[in-house]
Length: 311
Ligand SMILES: C[S@@+](CC[C@H](N)C(=O)[O-])C[C@H]1O[C@@H](n2cnc3c(N)ncnc32)[C@H](O)[C@@H]1O
Image 1 (spheres, rainbow, N blue to C red):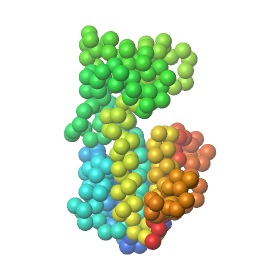
Image 2: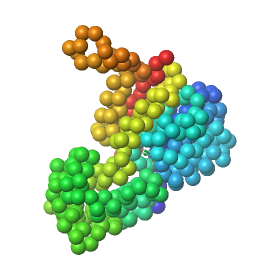
Image 3: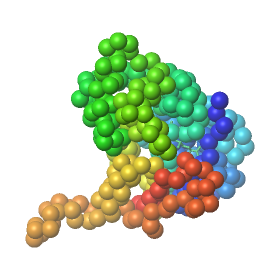
Image 4: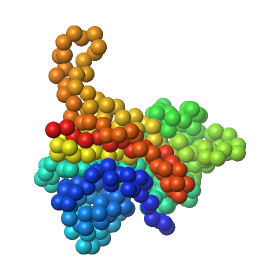
């Protein structure tokens, strides 16, 4: 049962988009619609918002918002944001004034056992943002080689015991394939010698890694960032909220590169790259206040970076 989703950096993110009446916005991660609802409320519904989410359940919530008066300018788009360039042409999206990406998963997804994101309760080992297609977490742990599984857990979970865990997964699947979250969590826990008084469950990093791999999250992020800059109107804002260092590194490096004119190596006397900056970074990275962190533990790792499109 879901208890709903508390939007992270709600006011800060909407402020960052500098909403104005009649503006056009893209919410690339509609989720529970918290950020979009705040934006539309501030503008009394007088704006167009393309609400993208890979999750069909999020589209049900988008349709509900659309049925409300403030939601009259909402255009729900069920797709992966990695396809933003194609979505832009298919939907004939005009230059936009703001794009928000609030990465990762929503509490709706985390709290719904049958989506298979959590080990707190048992559910099918799925983890797909869009459960209608693509390989699930069960497909990965049951069919990838031991090396591939270790690599995923190491790279996306930054888990130092990745090899130990991958070995235990492969040993166990010889007897019986994995089908459930609790089953995988207990195999991971045993592989690393139990909880041993740790505050976080020993399977936390493995679950994060599998989720990132299942949804190919980092590649999707790289694709959407480039397409987002292409769609922004002059002075249009891009705000990205990340929840772990792997995502934030990509956003930080992307914004730094796009804010730089020449990117030639320092020993090249005359510019040969002809690269020109398309973005200007706005302010410092924003983190939730202590008050927000205390009220919403999911916000603790959040960091938002904001940039504006140059003319
Ligand atoms: C943190 S939630 C967004 C919450 C939302 N901002 C709110 O205030 O309710 C992230 C959402 O992004 C979606 N998502 C994550 N990666 C995606 C992708 N590559 N393409 C489309 N949607 C994605 C997830 O399905 C999830 O619903």
